[in-house]
Image 1 (cartoon, rainbow, N blue to C red):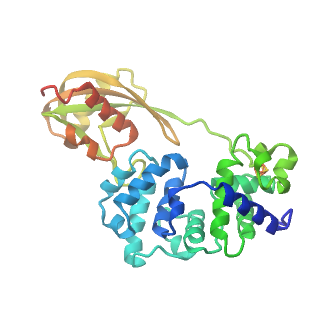
Image 2: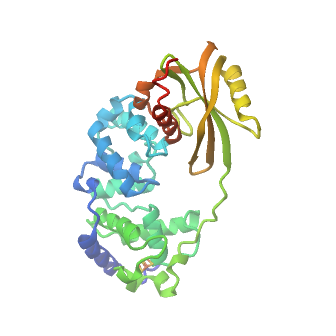
Image 3: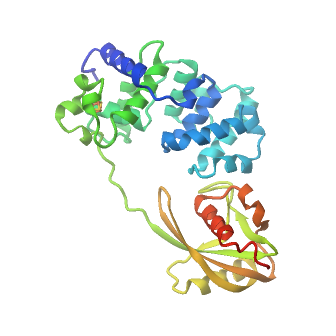
Length: 359
Ligand code: SF4
């Protein structure tokens, strides 16, 4: 693909704009590849403003790749709690062990080695290589994809092979020698601040004169929109079972959705009508517990990337039977990593003061 203008003009205009308008972000105050890697992982599918306090806490708790590798996964999940997409945490933790053992604690500085680590794709690797090591490696995160799709008015779906391949070529061909890190960050900032998904501010854009999407009069029609699928709505019931100032929790399997996090026992209702009856039947059959004093605690909702969850939560008091889970003192609930919806349930318990009631 031929570039519409000498690429040096695009490079110069974008770098000039970035020099004046770049965002002041904590991970831009360092060249530490570990800190840059952590920031890039946190920024996947998460807004900058949300990431900043997590990034600062994470780096304070685990200042080096070795300290992260040494930590128990539960502790890492606890620091990450609330940021979502927990597979990122597990991958980060697993990769820190690999870096410590295989690369002697040094974040790899080649694309080939970075791609062997879980959670690092080509764009994240490109960001680490260009920003931390100043290598001429391209990126293609969501912001870069949008800016390049508009600048060159690419017609295909940017997540499909051929169009994505073309965007990678464009991203690579635009990199200025010796300034790839700055250029990639400029692309990210332009996408976040000016070339936004809705209402791009073309009038303030340093690339306006070169932009084919702007020239078309319909910049928002690039890139081609994904057809959004309707996400399923899952309904489930959950039990808060109390015993001597403790509640019963279970830990999710280490892999898969919310892997390694703790939660109150819960079951999908599969169309059942009498939720209370169904829940206590499951408590008996799956956990082997008899419960008394059963009441509704509340209904909680959470939307994940692929489904929406409505959880009807009931509480009761342990009477008899075996347990299948762990009895956790209420005062220790805050120290366990919980998903957002189960954290809200635990806060609701404290708020209602049931922990103070005698068991
Ligand atoms: S001119 Fe408009 S559409 Fe083109 S890159 Fe700039 S902000 Fe995006």
